[in-house]
Image (cartoon, rainbow, N blue to C red):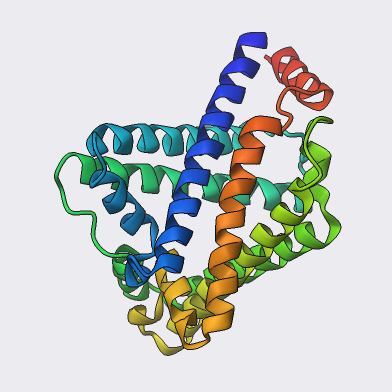
Length: 268
């Protein structure tokens, strides 16, 4: 049991660190103008690839993202965080699973680029997937439902920012500045999630796959409002810092997890 917990902790901390790198570099590209139109995870991967020993760094980044994906899928499947089997708990666990698979996709994109294969621009893959979905029965309804799910996720991010519930998972030694940094990061992420959600609902309503936005497209769509764009980009940098905070101070091995793992073991 202890080995499983240590493995889970390793996966989580490596993943939070990799997520922090992606968000901080993405915000840097957006704020410096070094690649504002390419301020996306794919743009980050291309920037890392151009660094000395870029392919190795990109491989390490992909590994961290994949480990975080594994952590989230594990959390969803075995309820390692004790969210429960009621409607709210199941919704949270579905969100964990979706996050896990999204990070698997990011890791795959990074590996493709490191191996010399094109990664594609931000939004292209999402738009192709949306186009395929529109070709199936109820495809427009499914896209709309996904959009609603992103809006719900945005609302959840805002709730966490307002209530600072993320602090309950922090170790006692976490510094005080974690609270404003976490709040700013979560609000910025909520704005991006809401933009993606609206694009999915619009795509479903009008049957237009080209409406779908990825993370970079969602951020770039705010450039018509420079102040908002800058604030969101700064907030995304803060979310990257918040991810580093998770990697350092987030509590993984606690009494709730021990009881959950013991209960799972007893059922076997």
